[in-house]
Image (cartoon, rainbow, N blue to C red; front, side, top):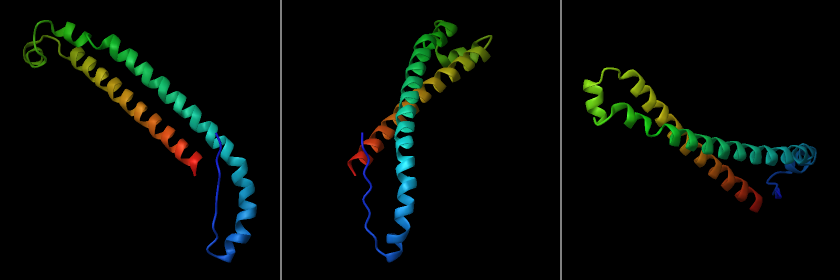
Length: 117
């Protein structure tokens, strides 16, 4: 992967300011690119973890309520706390999976578009 920076100076001040700043820029950019790759890997791993947790616990609310619908279970069930807790956990993992995948996709897109600039 590579990154290019192209500047056009609108004012004379830019000619004097950029040379010292370019040294800082050259020092920071490789770390930013590495950090982005690491973050994408973390997000991808977290999405896979959320998939596994959702898969493992996905059928549990159904087993907890038996033949009843979700609404019937809430209206007539003896213990609804564990059922609601399990539903909330499942919703959290599903949402986490979506957010991680979206974030990783956006970072990949940004990394690719910056590399083309």
